[in-house]
Image 1 (tube, protein in one colour):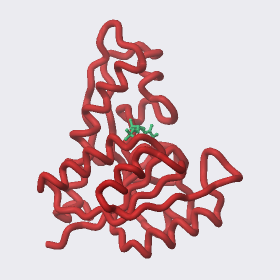
Image 2 (cartoon, protein in one colour):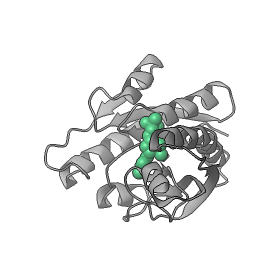
Image 3 (tube, helix red, strand yellow):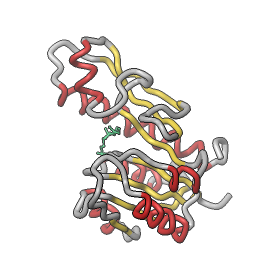
Image 4 (cartoon, helix red, strand yellow):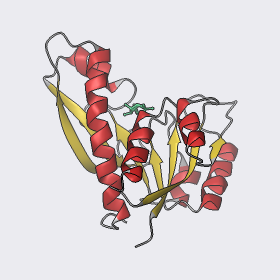
Length: 195
Ligand code: GAR
C-alpha cells in the first residue's frame, strides 16, 4: 500500500503537526506530508515543515479574519491539488472552511477540536469547559463540513478536568490527548479503513 499523501493546514505552533510527523518518522503511520499550509506567515508549523524538507505555502487573506475569501480559498484548492494530497488535515487551522475547499475534497478534510463535541464548539473550547464547570472534557477528530465544528465525529478521547485547573493547564492536558488521538485516526486513513 502506498503511503497516504497528506496536506496539513494550521495557524499556530504546530504541536499536533509535530505529533503526526513523529508518528510517521517512527514508522507508526504510512503517510507522506506533501505540503504544509498556513494562513499565518511565520507560524511555527511552517518552520517545523521546513526543517524536515516538507514543502510549505502561505495563504494571504486581507479581507476576512475568520474565513478565506472565495478567490483565496480557490487558490488554496489549486495548491492542494497540485501537491497530490489525498487527505487534508486541519491542525489548529483557525478559519472556517467554505465551499471551494469542501467541494474539492468531499469527506477528505478532517479537523481536531479540543472538546468532546458537540459540547463547546468554537474558540478556546478549553476555557469554555473550565467556565462551564464540567468534570470531563476531551478532544474530537471529525470530518469537516460547512458548520462550525459540526461534521461527523470519527473519534474522541476523554480528559478529566482537575480541581484548580486553569484554562491553560487544562489545554495542556487536552493537547497530550490530541497528540495521541490524531495520529491514531490518520493511521486509519493510511490503511484505507476510512478512505
Ligand atoms: C489545538 O489544541 C487544536 O485542538 C485547536 O488549536 C490547537 C492548535 O495547537 N484547534 C481549535 O481550537 C480549532 N477549532 P497546535 O498548533 O499546537 O497543534
